[in-house]
Image (spheres, rainbow, N blue to C red):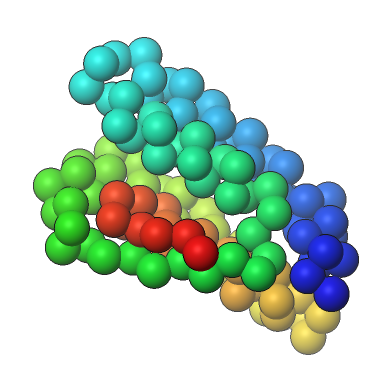
Length: 118
């Protein structure tokens, strides 16, 4: 069932969001200071393609300065995008698993540093 969910996620929004994360990573990597942010974006671009079955734990206290800079410099807008997508997915019973994945990504979009994916 996880494979079917991943394929459906990929077809109905996963590819677009992975491209968004990848482009953001490229933009962040233009400067030396932004490279840690870009590396996180690339990490989540890969996760954005096949998120079903993955567990994410976030720890804001591990890197509070980096997470704060991230939220101010665009993480809030990405989280808002994922929240809107999550509510739209949850509007139907069939889309609830995809909505839950969107909410997981909203949390990652706010606090990418210190997040562990299992």
